[in-house]
Amino acid sequence: MISYGKQFIDQSDIDAVVDVMRGDWLTQGPKVQEFENDLKHYFGTKYVCAVSNGTAALHLAGIALGWTENDIIITSPITFLATANSIEYSGAKTVFVDIDKDNYTIDLNQVESKIKECYSKGQNVKAVIGIDFAGHPCDWVGLRALADKYDLQLINDNCHALGAHYNNQKTYAGEYADIVTQSYHPVKHITTGEGGSILTNDISIYNRISSLRTHGMTKDLDKMEKNDGAWYYEMIELGFNYRITDIQSALGSSQLKKLDSFIQKRSKIADKYNEHFSQIESFIIPSVKKNVKHAYHLYPIQINFEKLVINKSLLFDKMKSSGINLQVHYIPVHLQPYYRNKYGYEPGDFLVAEKFYEKEVSLPIYPTLDNADVSRIITDLTKYTR
Ligand SMILES: *Cc1c(COP(=O)(O)O)cnc(C)c1O
Image (cartoon, rainbow, N blue to C red; front, side, top):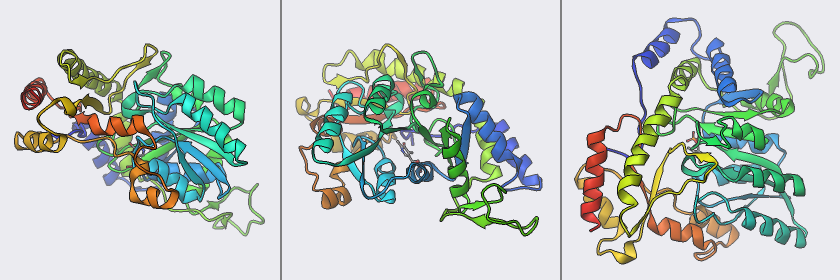
C-alpha cells in the first residue's frame, strides 16, 4: 500500500541506533547534544533544544514566551491540530485568520486587520504562529515587519519545511522567527520515531525551555538558592518530562545527513506531478513563490470536484482499491467541535481555507516512492477523475 508519506531508513541509520544500544547511555547521554549541534549547524540558529515530539516543542514555546489567559495568539486554520492546541495549553485565546489563496500559508493582510480589530476591542495580541504549510515558507519578511510594528512574538511552526529555502537560505526560519519548532515524526522530512525540537537565537528562551524539558530542574549555581553538594538540584518552576532519548538522537543525526538528498527526491516527484497535472483543467497544482524552494513535505493538489462526476470520498475509495492511500491536509481547525464550541467558529468564517479543504488532496510524496509508483498514481488519478 502506498501512503501519502513514509520514512526512509538505511543501514547507516540502523547502525547508528544499534551503536547507542550497545553503549552506556540510552537516554540523557552525549547523543542528544550531538544531534542538537548538528541541527544548529544545519539550520543556523545559536541554540537548539531537542524534545520528545513536535507538540511538546510548541507547548514549551508558549510557556517560554509567557502566554496567559489575557493574550491572543493568531494562527491559521490550515495546520495540524497541535499548532492551535499549543495556544490552548497556555490558556491564551486562539484566534484564526485565513490563508493566502496561492500558497496556503497565513494571509499577511488578514493578520494585520485582525491585530487592528483586536486592539480596537482592547484585546492584547501577543504572538503570531506561521506554519510553513506543505513545505512552502510563509511571507516571513512581511510577518517580521508586522511583529516589529505591533511588538509581537513570532513563531515558525516549521514542521513541514525542513530543508526549504527562502530568499536562497535554508537557515531562514531562525532569522525571522523568535522560536522555530520542528517535528521528526516518521512522515516528516527526517525522523527520530517521535521527536521534535525548539530552535532559537535567544539564550533566555533556550535556558527556560531546557529546564522545562526536564521538570523545571536546575543545577545552575547562579539560579539556585543554595547548594548542599554534588547531588543537589532545585526545581524552579513546574516543568515536564519532554526529553528525547540518545537512541532517537543518534537516528536524528544520521537522518539529517540525508536531508538534502531527501528534498531532491521529493522535488523530482513534485516535478512529475506538476508536469502532468498542470495540463488538466480541473486540477490546481501547488504554486511556488519566486523566492522560495519548496520542501514538499506534502504535495497538496486541488481538484475541482464540482466539475467532475466523482466526489472526493469516492475518489479516495477507488484509489485505495488500487493500493494508493490519499490524505487531506487539513480539516480546517476552526471547524473542529472543540474550537467551534469554545469560540463559536462556524462554517463560512474562513472561506479561503474552507474552499481549499473541499478541493485539497495530498498525493503520495516521499523519498522511496519510485518512478513506477509515481506513474501509477498519475495514471490512476487521471483515470478516476476523467
Ligand atoms: C507534525 C506536526 C506537528 C506535531 O508534531 P508531532 O511530532 O507529531 O507532535 C505540529 N505542527 C505541524 C504543522 C505538524 O505537521
